[in-house]
Image (cartoon, rainbow, N blue to C red; front, side, top):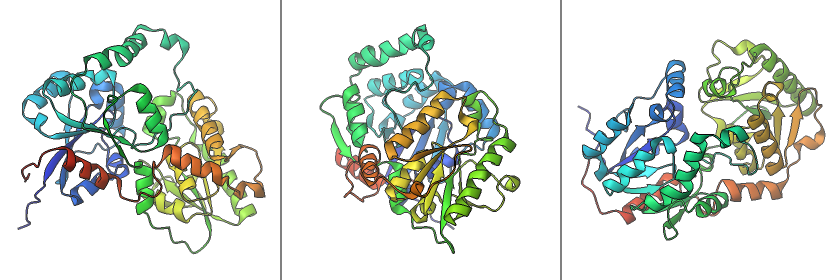
Length: 400
């Protein structure tokens, strides 16, 4: 008979997007089990955006938990209130966002029950380029729902909060500036300096072993990705997208003599779509390793493009015609190009030898600003966070 795993604590991590298997891998949540912690994810995505939840549920396999990671899904505010009242307020909450209007009741409950918690926001390292529209129009900013959210975040939330977090993780200088400016956790909150999950995954990865030099394409599964389809509101025609993408790959092979390996998006499945990627190898779950061993990285605007800077590898930002209609997507590609000193390659452009050069100063600046507060700190993210949990909170009993 297999022995039952005994955990030292339960950590609760709320999420405002649907909890999928790909999220578990990206956040390395199984590392917590190795450190002796049971994780319970509180899925609030249905409350935040019912349409997105239903779309994700119908197009992806939701993660429903296992022996190391539990999932509690909530479909109403009342269910969430019952969850707190049933004793879960005694656990440690690690909250990866400092506000969210649709689930503002979460913060009221945290205040009401004096929940022990910390903010771990910032560890996802989703880019926040300054001065871009993020898809919000002036008309939307003048709407009543937007004004209500603005007043809540800027005024009411700061005045009404009574229970402050034990600590706030700071994974980069950009995050420090952002959360200090917003006064997200109070002026006197303890700051714990860490790095992002992407930098964490990069540190753990071993360089990919290949028989030939290669270029890695950081795939975003564009024509088929459920979130892209949901957000863009227009259809990306697969034949046209992959035709121009393969023209770029042909240039890479001829000019730089590199083979192409596709780092498949976590939600991608090319088993019945390999006709779109002739002459390419496809690897799943190896993005960090592939970038670490690559001679060239090509991608659109995936968060993983930051790993090109970590690996000191040349980067080309490919501006596909399929994304030209989306202003936020275009702005993010331009932002990556500017921040990393990478060339923006549009359909029909020709590759140059200079595309294999890098701007080391911009790379190092990007890592410090966006990925790791202290480049000398190689301790893994969850080890740093759980060590701080033990320092801040009294010793618990064991959990079976």
